Image (tube, rainbow, N blue to C red):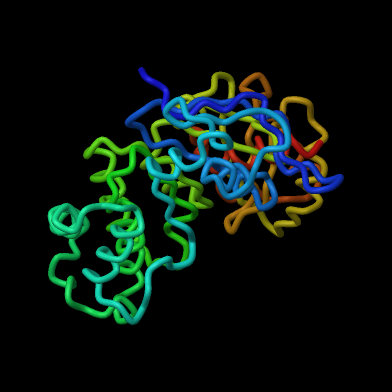
Length: 310
């Protein structure tokens, strides 16, 4: 497939601090690409570079073959950026906001009218076209943010943590919106801290930590990495911190985390379950529940991020 984003050996430094460290990656046209990582991983810095808001220290980034530095004006005309904070004006109506942002991009008035009608219909905001933007619900404000970024028909949409602050119902509605935008042919690059969101929406995912890419692949590929399984063990009295420390010493253990219901252990299949249960027994723990499952994207994330810190 055709690539819309190409990043080559890109680094971004702030003084002695390296926020993005020698990153190379590509995004295929017409896909939803997820950029994940813990706070401080370098996601936001990379987004700022792609949005032409920050220059790379070393390396290059291209969008539709255009350099984000030397072709900045052209790049800005083919991307839409949806920041976490609202970019529209509360005192203007929904339609007035679209008219304003369309004019900023030099879209002819008659074309703004046509596009506004289509976008508002697509994002289920038609009935609110005459409503003041500041009076909209949280979910509708997020959709209006997206509408303002789509008014000039960008090739690519950048979404920075689009679901932050939304309730579960609004979040699911937003997912439908994002899928619809993709179906219209727009490539989407998004950051998110919600693993379920990334799993449900993204065609491909990159996990960053300390400025580097540590994991890349399709969600199902990352979850189905061979030779791994997840065990959840609940015990009494449940001195999980001591157990965690002991279990993490074992070579096949990939990660061990304390959850609400007990210890969640990700391991290579060659370690017999009996060995883990013996550790519980030797510490006077009485096993109540043992459950097994395939790794979730959250398990992959925790393992990838944790491994990068060692």
